[in-house]
Length: 171
Image 1 (cartoon, rainbow, N blue to C red):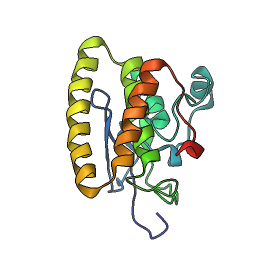
Image 2 (image 1 turned 120 degrees about the vertical axis):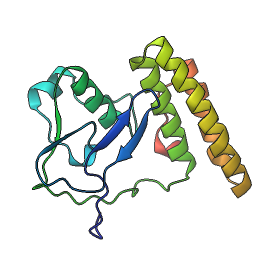
Image 3 (image 1 turned 45 degrees about the horizontal axis):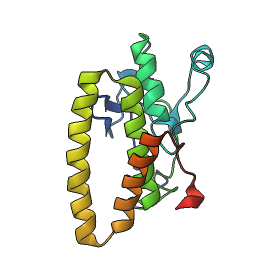
């Protein structure tokens, strides 16, 4: 980040739960990881072309997780090189609890699960995701932020009806 803090030095991606755990300690040597942020990717051109670039069905997240997951499924490595440094202002696009962020987080995670997980893992995802949403929604209700709850519900409706992800100006 601009203040010198490490936002991400790779991390773990759990595809069943569609969750990330960013590592914040930079390794001493080039190291393998499960995920790197799109803000700091250097990608093999041949692989990127074979994927037709980043998946534009995702908006504001998951395209980098999906690309890393796909690369690992194909036996490729995701590496962190401690000699590289990228400055990125994390969270500059949307506030942490904004309806925009909640909508796209919900939409993108459900889309990933639908496209990439088998039926057993989809069931595990659905159970985890519904329980985690109920917990978050209760926090948001207590904070009086019902717009973010409505945005999450709209994402469920959109994904179920095949509606593409909504652009920022709709929030």
